[in-house]
Length: 431
Image (cartoon, rainbow, N blue to C red; front, side, top):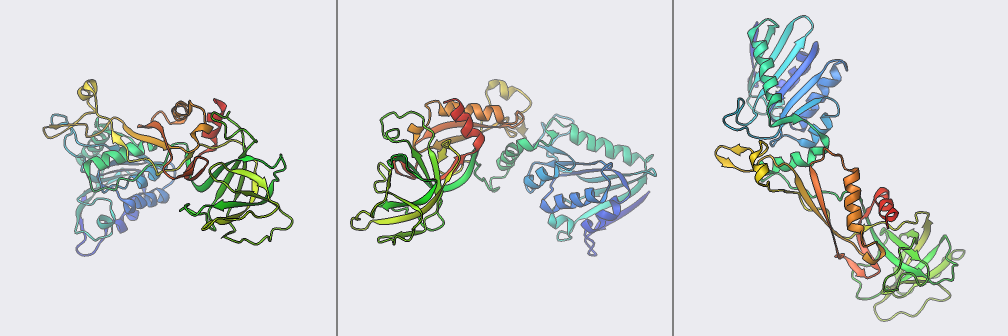
């Protein structure tokens, strides 16, 4: 048995030694409390250095500074186990998972064990911190080999440790934030929605059915309208059949979708669009697309937005959302039955749901044009997410429809999100 003390004095970063230690490995086990982006990259390099037949396993703590996004990417290549928190004091393995150990098996009965203070972080692996670990080269028959295997197995067998499930990433992040209030608490994207910023108009076709697939539309911009379209702004114009939009309770129509970007915003736009069909909308309170013979007069402070457009073959009206992303998830407080089970651990003598069973993010969909969607839109959204969400996903969403914050008129809105094609089809399929 050979034992070497490996530290940064003199300057000998452990990260530079790893490739040499694992090159003849037939099995690699890493049980390290904290693995940052740099540590995950080091494990990726280890995996790249070995053949696909060599298993690489990792046990890591959910606690900061572990980079959970980096761990999620790593879990697609190797077997990852994640420790979710503190153990009950009376359990066999108690306290916080805090090991730092690397166990390498070789085909010639030789074994290498690295154990000490090194976390697999940038400061730990690159020699910034003054760390110290033992590098033990030994044989299969040595007692330390059996003891090391038993320790790693105990880490994985803990009731607070589970095989890393990428669909539970939001839950892992919430647990990390519960332990560390300084960890950023990012917002969550809407389930079934894509980020799509645009200015959306609903309008009736008053051209007598002559609306072309390509042309130019002049839109009157009132002086009190603060969010004026500008070059680079996406404009989506959904054109409904005449007399189908402005009724008190219109049916669910399938409008044409016209798309374009403003080419100019001016009080006196020049007519330089010869060869194109030209149209105008002069009232955004009740938008109607009309054929343009001459440009109508403007009142004081008003302007025209000139928007070349093309028809999009998509006929279904997406579900738009005008607000921001979902708020951070909140932990669902356990009921009496949940308090009794072993997923409500303690820290010392303090009871509380340290590792939450599920997390809820309440989606208040502030939707413009609610009259254009079925009354059952809320139920349909919930049903869609229930059918398509991974059953292992611990994040639950509550849906509540509200009024749009950035609505310009009842028929014009600045939006930030639109439903993806699958959600849009699901809503219209059940209208």
